[in-house]
Length: 127
Image 1: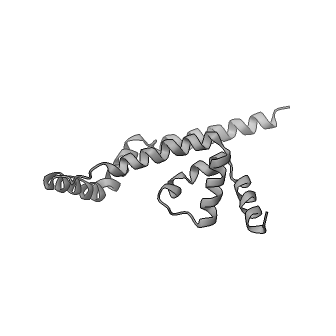
Image 2 (image 1 turned 90 degrees about the vertical axis):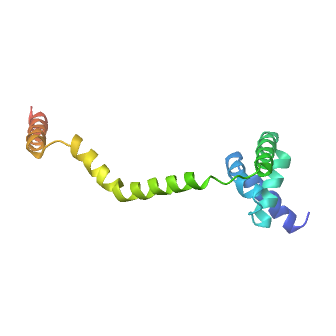
């Protein structure tokens, strides 16, 4: 066994099930560097569990790629874009209003904090 094959074997041994499964997306999209792809494929050859997972994942990806893509009707696209613009414009204002409804007034919060601090001090200083 030459040095390159030994390194590949060592890399495949380093990949855990979780790491291998996390690389399924990149493997399906053919975005892995050659050595990483080889490490994943080596792990798949040795691990039945990951191999079943890869077969299921890749068959799902193939089915999805065969699905015919459709365009949304222009009216729907326009309606969605209008709502998005409106939410961007008023989103922060709505968030501030929701916060204002549920916050405690400072006049209530400060006495509660002082009472808690005094109670903690009395408990710690008790003999």
